[in-house]
Structures are given as C-alpha cells and as structure tokens.
Length: 465
Image 1 (cartoon, one colour):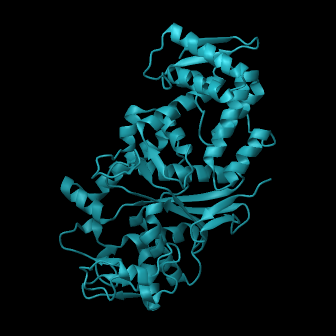
Image 2 (tube, helix red, strand yellow; image 1 turned 30 degrees about the horizontal axis):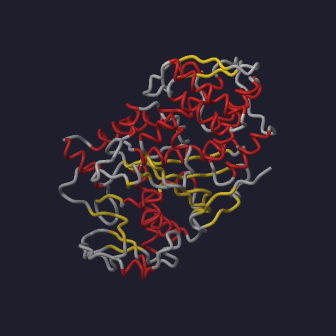
Image 3 (tube, helix red, strand yellow; image 1 turned 180 degrees about the vertical axis):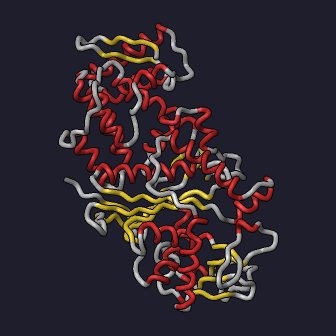
C-alpha cells in the first residue's frame, strides 16, 4: 500500500505524512473574512482542503478539521459603517451566504468553525506571553507590535530574509513601530469605531490584529503544536509567517508539522481581480453552471497548480462529467456499494491521491472505469465507478437527474444526419483502434446532449439527454 506524501511548504519538498498521534489528524485552515460574497478563489481554497479532508478520512484517519471565520477586521468595520448596520449583522448575513455556496459545491462542513471574536481572551494571553519574552512592545500610538528582528528564524516559511524584506520595504506611515518590519498584535481603539469592535485589555481598549487571531484559534482547538495548517498561496507571507512567529515565539516550540498552500485562480490566463473586471463570485458562476460541474472543473487541476477559469474550460468539464454520468445511465446500480480498494483502478486512484492529493490522475481512473462500463455494461464496474467518484464528492446524484436536467447539453443542436455521421466516424476510429479519437467524438456528442449506448453486437444507439 502506498504512503501518503504531502508537499510541505516549510520543507519545500514532498514528505511522508506522519501524524503526531497515530490515526488522528489536526488540521487548521484559514477561512473567510466575511464582509462580502465568496469568489472563485475562495471556492478553489475551500475545495482543495475539502478534498484533503475527504482523503484523510477515506484513509482511515479521525480528522479534527478547523476552518475559522474572521469577524473582526478593518474591511468589516468599514463595510458595516457604509451599510449603516452592525458588524454582527453583516457577518451573520455573509456567513449564511458562504454556507449556502459551500453546500451547493458539495464542500463538507469542518468539524469546528470558530469566530475570531469568540477567542479574544486567548489572543490577549498570547500577546501577554510575547511581551513577557521581549517579543512584543507597546508603541506611542497605543498599538502593541511584534518585534520581528527579535524572533530568530523569521522568514523560514516564505524563504524571505530580513535583509530582502528590508530592501523591499515601503515607507511606513506608522511611526510608532520600532522597525518597519514589525506587525501589529493589538490595535488601540479609535473613537470612530463602534463599541462592538473594542475590547478591554491591559494595554487599553482595542481590538486584535489579523495575524494573532489564527494563532489563538488554532491553539484553542488543536493545541500549541499540530499536524497540518493550510490556506491560499497568498497567505504564505505575511500571514502564515507571522502566525509562526507569534505562536512559536510565545510557546517556545514548533507550531505546525506540514504547511499546505493551494494555487491561485487565473481568468483567461490573467490574475483574477476586481480592477481587471474579471472577478467572479461563486453565486455569479452558479447562476450559469451546475454546481457539480464547477466542482469537477476545480478537481481536474492539482490543488497547487494555478487554476485557469474560463467558460471554455468549464464547458469542457461539463462535457466530461456528462460522459461519466452517461456511463451509469442505463445500469441498475442497486444499493450503495463501498469502494473495493483491491481493484486495479482503485489501487491507482489511491496511489494518485497519496501522491500529494493528485486529483487529475485520480479523475483519469474514473474515465478508465467509465470506458470499461461502456464496453462491458458490468454492474460491478459501474458500482465501483460511482463509489470511487464519491470519495471526491462526485457522481452522487442519480444519473437521470443530472442528464435530464440538460446539465450536459451543449449549445449545438445537431441534426440526425450529423449525429449519424459522427457515430460512423467513431465506429471507424474504434475499428482502427484509435481510441483517443473515438473518445473525442463521444465527448463531442455528449456535449451536444447526445447519449450513446454501445451494444454487445457492435451497434450504437443514441438518444437526446
């Protein structure tokens, strides 16, 4: 049996995963700052760790999965003030929208979803420890800052040296800092900010900085030292670097064994951003595409690779997912079946997933199984396909529910002569053992809403989805 290997950002290599406690995994993932709708980048991050969560459980681990909510932050205060509402009202509304989006995409809820405002006492305790060790100081403006140069090893996650950071720094308007590299742990209260954004502390009324929130929440739920910490690649520096400095500075030992970061989302090969006008919320996308098609589209890319979002790529994912459902369409599957992990496709599926959660290779095994189902009409093979896809949160609907909804139908509208011609071309390709061309034609027909039924005598029937 293969061993699970994870690309550890801290080590900059794949490493065999060895949990701190046999059979159990603690995993913390930085979640949303809830003041607006979640976008495609958020979907990519949550999907990446949903797959990791699912695979750890499928591998027999008892997983304690924590994904936080940031409910106190500058953007939240600003948006609530603009709307003329309380912060809690804003946060509760967009948390509800986030939960609706993740449920639609088949993202399993974490075991714990802590809110930052629930853990302010823990944050104050860590700041107090840092001050006692000379790693935190109160500046003239009332803020409490972390003294970066006094923490040995700062930059080990991102690979950035203090000299590089200093060379690239901008002029800092916060003259209260001893060093421009220092970052805020506790922000002194401002009169313009609402009372719900202020807490009492030994340093006066104020609120936590963003970085200290995750150190406190992860420690409260997983301990000072735990297995996996994850998030988007954009959080590697400075957020995760600062988390390490705070937690290891306070507790005096390692914080996390494996750091995992997912790749960025690009739109038509450009970085997604509001300024470029190529910014999509999950809700925007789900108005146009079926949620399982979007899930499948994301899973076809490795979680560390850039994900290129485009209509062409999602249309291709739609056709491919329809092909998988079509393979199951005319087979009576009966009761739910468990995965047979000794079966050859499942063995390769496991090897792919154990190799740093390689979903593209795992999905390729699903297509091999679908081809076998089309060729043999084997109920056992079809049940294996459905069960194995279910590990990734796919093919969990009745095939007819997916196909009859027209999810896989393209924009085409081929007439019967065109359909017959394509079927003849496919038959000729199969006879010539050009299976790649045969599969391409099947995919083209599937995208046009045409379902093929290969019969044992070599003939092919078709019908519209």
